[in-house]
Picture 1: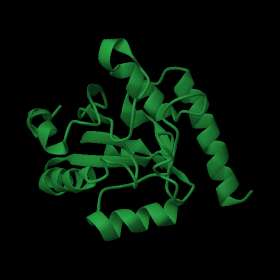
Picture 2 (picture 1 turned 135 degrees about the vertical axis):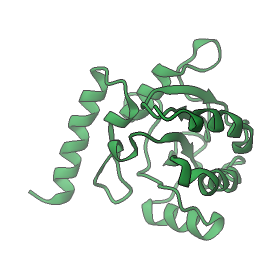
Picture 3 (picture 1 turned 120 degrees about the vertical axis):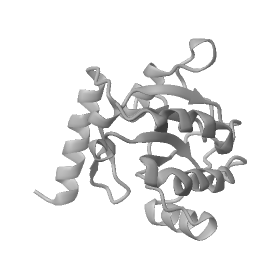
Length: 184
């Protein structure tokens, strides 16, 4: 069996498991940019900021603020995880290589950027299904309204906050600081 096919089968199994109610974000797996599967247990014990991203969005300059947070707090156990999404205005049309190139060349992004996914609908990635369940939006809405919706996850893998696309990364810094102060 080819590695790509094995990765796709693992991902489909993980999607099914996600629908059955996994709760800790760091117990889940996601699709890696190379088409394989990335196990989020690699981030266990860290504070995470998970963001659906796009290269051609009015909020795209937030990559700069996300990278600044990543660089400032990475040595304290903080990680930004980017998930490109093309569901909002077709603002992420590129393939994995184009997205990686854009992020690196335009914003010098060093945080992990995973495979392009859907965040809403029947093909929504299980990670984002769990994030939306854990932290609904305004008036209890679960759907993600636009690119650069952000989810803050504590060291135990619990989603603790959801931020609108209009929330700038630097405006989340105090919440990140609070979570980083807690070791458990």
